[in-house]
Length: 202
Image 1 (cartoon, rainbow, N blue to C red):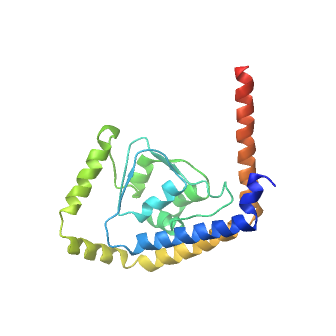
Image 2: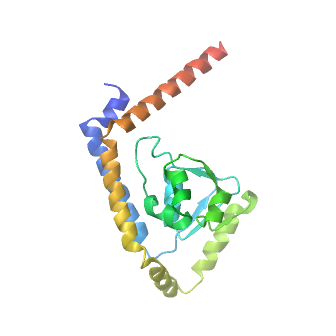
Image 3: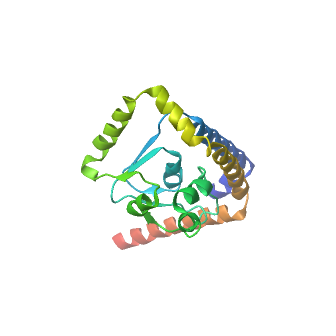
């Protein structure tokens, strides 16, 4: 039995089920919190790094950030409520480019689509994001919490339902042969790259 097989045996499946359940509980906390959540993206957003940003209240990114979600490529499914949030934020067709067509999307495209609040130059990125956080921290906290609750009210149940469906989907997809085949192909390609690199040095 190789490493890939061990990930997909009964013990591996049980471990992944537990991991997906923990991920789902984490998403429930994010959906239900009345705290203001700020995401600062200073590099590539790949997979969860892309799908999760729509759960944040404010999202800032550097100009050269890019995003892609290779869920279909890996035989898996959407996560972090992205099956709902992406289409809500940018329309179904643009969401399909990310979730179904394996396209890489720039920060500028996502800013235009409404998924990114603002693009900030790299040299001032963290200080400028912290300025926003500090400004918000000085606002009346109960008013902040109440207004966020009002904004989330029409969305919350839809997000909780999407989270539940996606967690169940991840468990189901992980039992399919497609993720195993995709991971095995990736491991093989990495081994072949190492072999070619080794021959090139000789």
